[in-house]
Length: 329
Image (cartoon, rainbow, N blue to C red; front, side, top):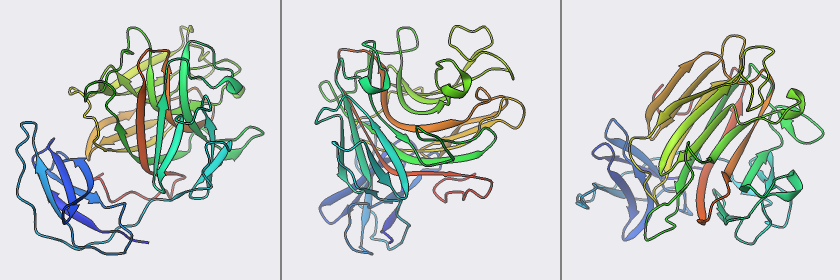
């Protein structure tokens, strides 16, 4: 199936909007090249005439662009979803639900979108969460080598992850997050280590997280044979990027990750945010064990209610992993 796209030229960092007549279809932040392809995901047909505008931080809005035609492949759909079921599908991949089991914890607004919400005290008790964390996540149980509890992607395997991410306002039109590098954590996407293989609990070797109201990329590694436990002197944590600007609520950010977890040579991590490469790292990555991917919120316990959305979720592995046309290499 294909959907329409419109190419919008806008000032870098401004908000681009695509519409079909008076109906708003999508909204994104323009990239560093001042353009963006906007995916009209909610359309029911194969082609539509669409136009776009952009607006800056001073709320000045451009005139609409000329309608354009185009096509684009849709990301895998979310199917078999039920908040009461322990698993569902994204394309052919099985994902396990890890939440407090509340009606708001995880919802599926449309076939491309997942919404996660946490309140103070929402933890995943079956997974052993204590009272010090709040969690609403999903774990990929299919990609890689099957285990008796899910699947792991072996160390040394190329991985590509593509998705769109948005935070919702939770206080007077803004996003409030009291968790930061000095008092806690707020993870919104992570490659989790195979702690069964390492024999100790660990923090994620790769995480997309919020440091207050700033998006941030963090990695961890140990030398071969090193202890990856948080208190270990062998553990190294690298903050590779922190957004200098507060995140905008209600606006999807396009995120692409290319990585290979290896702490013995060949490790790398490339990250693009809204078409701009923000991380270009080559070096040791991970703890020498396999990993698995998780979407959603995992934070140290906090008073504020928080909600995020993800859509267009894709995860591929292997040397022949296709390179997305959405961002330059």
